[in-house]
Image 1 (cartoon, helix red, strand yellow):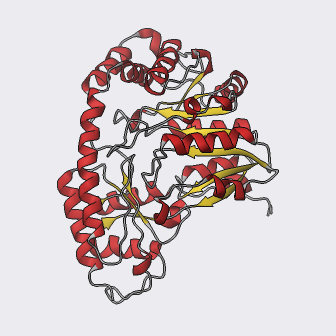
Image 2: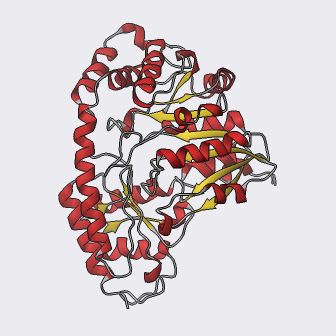
Image 3: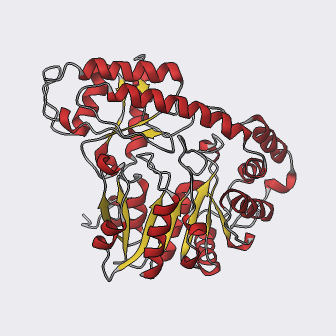
Length: 402
């Protein structure tokens, strides 16, 4: 019998998406008749705006979209993304420097695959989104965590970044607004970090997918625009999923220097070829339209954000900083670890999350998934009534901890 591995070491090392796993388990329980409320997936509960759907319907009827199109994206969509980026963040990029990808995740992977050689280090602020580590590993890179906590609102300082930098550091991953914490760096903080990166010749990969979701006076500032001295060592990642409630349409993009975009496009030409043309035309309608639909969604998210944070902070043993962006709260639950609850003593936030799902029928994602045990991530991108009911169940159960 062969002793060779059936699945490669490289692929065996990839972890399942914790957020999608929690969401899948919650949906399975719901399908079995249990009234589960899920705070797991980062997915707007709104339908995609009608004008975007109509653009997709029209595209589906157009014979030219029934064929292969350029691997790097429809020329008209690339042009529209360049214009949208100029409008929203002031960053100037020619359409030739845009690569349209199958969702934001493909943009993340292709950015790291294009920039990293084996052993290159990437500075990643923790808590971090679950896909970043896997994309970095697949590219042969080494993730170096810069850990933050609730005392700083989950914001990293230049001093922390400098302490983590080595001769092998090649990339800083910069995410604002943040998934999973909702942290938003001020323009001043963004400039300070960007200038530090430029001074040390680092690449900056900036994930801007939550750019339009900020609250309470916080403002998004693109590091690419705020720090022009980064020059051609910045790569912007973005997509339509969160802003336009288009998670299922799978359209993201990467904007970068010409050599990086060309190389990433070559990779994509062999991996997937072009993104679905129907989805691309829907994305064209989205990025070319005004932001009125986005404003309505943001108003609802803001209302839910305030409700969730207030309710979470009323639970003994839970501390939740106010998120300034995205649609997540990231409360610390460290004080509850090890306490007795329904005859059990959960020894980690992962065990506590499992107990909550079983006993309160509420799904949350434990901090282990994001590199910082002792926390939960809860998405407030769900209906107001479900949000209140879910956090109320959580509060009732956790009140029993002793």
